Image (cartoon, rainbow, N blue to C red; front, side):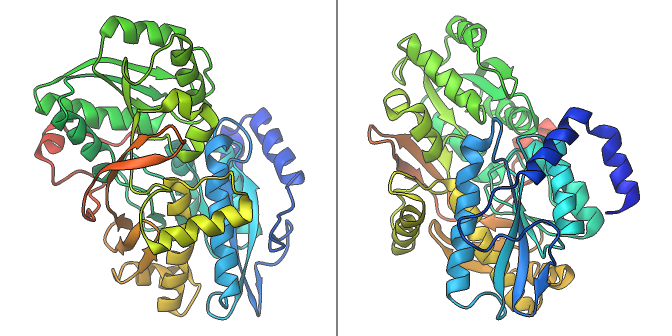
Length: 422
């Protein structure tokens, strides 16, 4: 490990967080794939290439991130079964970010510096990604980030396989406006993604001549939403735009249900509730509520049928796929395609391949292509509604949309001077 980086991290990570990170590393779980490598082993042999998986297996975000990790493992197994990458079998070293950005940073450095991985697949929250970003940039490593996010970022060392804001947030608000919603209440977890998303939404709603009647944030581990629900009742919105993440969604919707509120009383449009969260919260509670993603388990097509069948065969028939899981699955295949175009695992050569604009994958959501100048994907947008069966059905879709992470093609966003938050 670089000593200067290590000392810097020690200065910002609390002793409790460091102890938790060390405990997680010592208690690393054995993989059910037989391909996970033990800590401290060499990064590759003549017939292997090692990658890193970095997700929250514990903490408030584990509810969402486990499915993402599982989809990556599925893709790795499929690729190995078909001959690997450049003739090499993929093995993986796995670390637990434990829902703490500082832990994500420590574990990312371990994967790069100690495990010598060729690339990392990982993170969910923007806080975790922003903690890892300087690590991968300092080491000239490559992170594949699988979740929709607030935009206002582009890095040579990150590929963003989830949606940019113009591929989720903006079209969702346009859809609500077209459906006649006029009074918006913004509810989010208190970190980068919700606060930046709500800057975007405020500008978009104002541009449409409509009203944001409330804006509230909850701590990531908050379980009591009584005060926020009281503010929603007082504001009387037409729709709640929800950017809660992790267990906050469980607490909020269950407490709304305890007051017998349904989508008929308070419609929500959520950006971080997918099939996995519906299964945890309950379709009886979420039925009728809306979400915005690029993929659902119900998305039609032979590629998705095969993906869903393979996922359920490996992890159990009760498991569901989701947009972040599908984007994580795509990421492994896109990395494979970039390595093969580069004929190398070298980060600079793989990055050159990515920036050629020629890297695509026939994905479960439809063909996705990495846009070389900003490392985001061209993707379709799908608005969905939760059904009584726990699945999400598409109610609106677009053709593939080019990513615009900084919203430079939207005059109302440029005029609002929206800036990234750190």
